[in-house]
Length: 147
Length: 140
Image (spheres, each protein chain N blue to C red):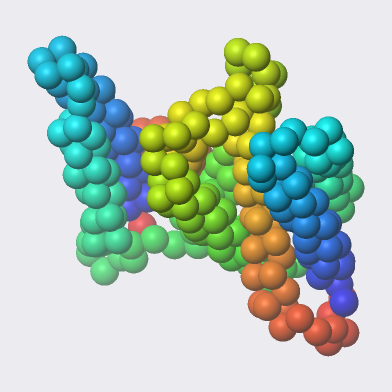
């Protein structure tokens, strides 16, 4: 498994962990106190782990090898393009769906927090799509690729 | 000017038009009086958005060379940064203006449309900067 595959798995694991732990924390906190403030910080702290990515898995797998080659770069580029296209389709279609199907239509109000949540959700969706696309192109598992 | 540059210029013009229309629709309804003309203007934003999709479909990247592809990829990544900077800025602004308030669903849709045009604009400008803005006789 090369660097980009490891990073893709790391992405998926961190985002899933952040979602699961935060949801559990919010549920426990709401049952306990009636409102939630602390659990949301779990999300921020766990997501900060993604900032470590540039420093991770930098050691070449084989002696005297390179960390990544042109094929890896091409795969990452394709993954970013695919994730970007998917992101826009989902973002626009979901906004149109909310506009059409939400309550009394377009004029109905939603809490201001909806927009930051949409942006955060969009960014997470994009990260997951990039990671999944990288893993799909490599064939998900370890096939003995070495850079 | 090669095909990729022509496409980028066209994309820049359409996205600028879309942004102007979107800003007009947003400002026209700023005081919540729901004037129908501005509501239709918001809906009319779908036209430049669809024309951008048609543009990328009718002028595919098959005839580009490696350099054009590299420039396009770099522009795409910069466009993504631009979109999230725009949306992040809007979120911060919204949290300052009305932290516990409400926003109309159609305004969210309008913001998503505007974000799409910001992406087209940022990536077009990034691509044109990489091509150095001017015509230097490049041909595909």
